[in-house]
Amino acid sequence: MKRSIVNRVAHLVAGIGDAGQRVLKTVRDHRSRLQRRVFSPFLLLIPIVCSNSMRAAPANIWEEFSVEKAFAHVQRLVDFGPRPAGSKAIEKSRDYIEDQLRGSGWQVTRQAFSDDTPRGKIQFVNLIAQFSGQGKAASPSFLLCSHYDTKMFDAIRFVGANDGGSSTGLLLELARVIGQHPNLARKIELVFFDGEEAIEQFSQTDGLYGSRYFARQLQSGGAKQFRGGLLFDMVGDRSLGITLPANSPVEIARDIFAAAEVLKLRNYFTYLGRELVDDHVPLNAIGIPTLDIIDFDYPWWHTADDTIDKVSAQSLRIVGSVALYYLSEFALR
Image (cartoon, rainbow, N blue to C red; front, top):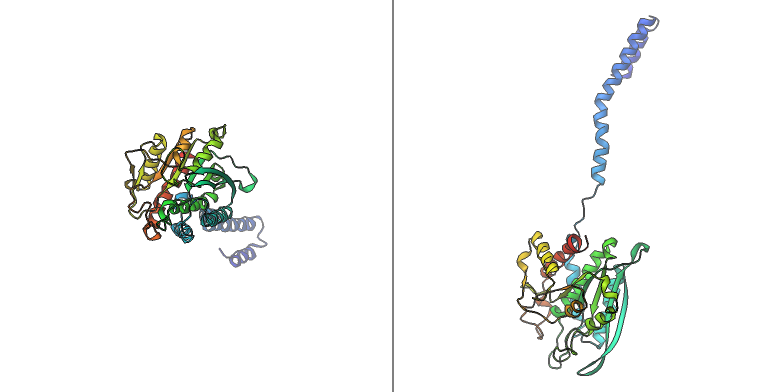
């Protein structure tokens, strides 16, 4: 009811006494009730609308993985050329990896050591990264690992796009995504192993130089802080088929399969049916159950044809998404 009508009624009843005042009160009460009927439901909707517009949907961390960024890392590493231990190219790779990790909020430590090889003493450097953003100290309990060296060949130019490149690019992108979730990141330690490749043939003293040294340093007591780990190796094959070795930790393998099932990617993961010698072996030997996520059915393994055109961004996405789902929903929930 408009104010002019109320005023006219007030003018008409003025001077009529108590009866007039009662009429005026009735008119005002009617106006008040009418306003409440019209405006109250609308006002009640305002906080609901605002609340819904401001409430962000829960983030699925596995959907944050960027295939473009992961593939770009692989391309950059391949552009450095062959990257065997002790080479100038692997030093360029180290600088690149460190820069990318620091840009994502990780603190990087160089674990340098030398070891005897069939070609004499060689200097190796593992890169170890922890996250301590927002002023809180890291307390890692889970390892994510990759080797970043390539095998040394005299007769061919081996750039290791898949073998050494794909897993390193993947781990750098995982570091970026995980770094945006500090509570998760502080529970993880990243390790980039040098010297995974044997100088000649894998043996007790040739190959796995970085992981063997890393494990020895933890053996005095540090291994107990880690309840598990994932190792990535050769994860970029265009015809992806992750083949978990027979010596895989049963519980982690089960949960990786479950994560892949949820994401409808289970058909890309199976068992190899035999054991593999890789950087997970020294870690398992000191009591850190570590799963080797590897596609060992790769025709261009240790050939000059292990080039960037053999690497698929889609394969990197599959492995990265499953790893992130596993970490957030199983391992570190």
